Length: 344
Image 1 (cartoon, rainbow, N blue to C red):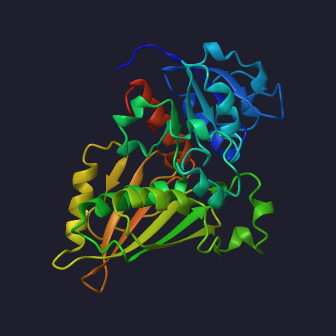
Image 2: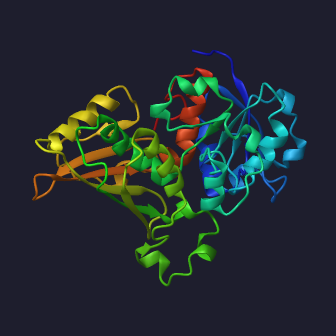
């Protein structure tokens, strides 16, 4: 394990994810926070935005003030389209590594990126130098890359539960998958009220982005790596709570396979993964079980039909779905303990 501290910078420090990231980083014993950067509120203390952050930290500065030769890692918690511009300029600093929490480096095919995000990718030459990093699936490979692309929150909750089953080939019908994911409104970012004009947003459930949610781009990519013929239906919902995601995944088992076979496969896959909690069969779970933690909790449940199984996967969208997984990826990248700074 690495013994030396690393110097880090956070870009996009004052958004929902940026603040959660800084909160967790402030507990980490292996880092020095050199700069906290934003476009507004320059000179403000970070605790002005989040009272949970009590450790003395640098005041908000502009990115132009950063001395990049002294930095080991840049966290980017920026709107889609902004990270690629920065990395195009900063990739020349050979010592510098990047963990991007936007979608800019999640989709390897830049034509697909444009299809889902409506933007031409501006850093095509370094796109293939990134790795899509659900921590549990890249523990060794991640060390070979400088650009770490943090997955989306919905895809994290979905893939931790579903990828082991797709890889098995003999458990479920890969062409008949339905995914229903419900998220707290923080997943939409600070400007969510402008994005969603829905009446009574704080008192109701809202189905949105029907058949066109942008996270389907990375799900398509990752599923096709396993099985080019995977077919799934996905729809997200906003629920009137601040944080948390509960994904319900409906699958059809293959002949002579049961919910217990699915449960055993998940237990086998995740037995050494510190942040996965696999429940006993038919256990009821909810986002309250994982709020403010980096855990993913998964429950496999039988239905009234033997070949129909529901898999529930719960995460905190701001932690395991964003900031916590980013720190977990940092720990893997630099050889720290995987749970360093992430203990509750």
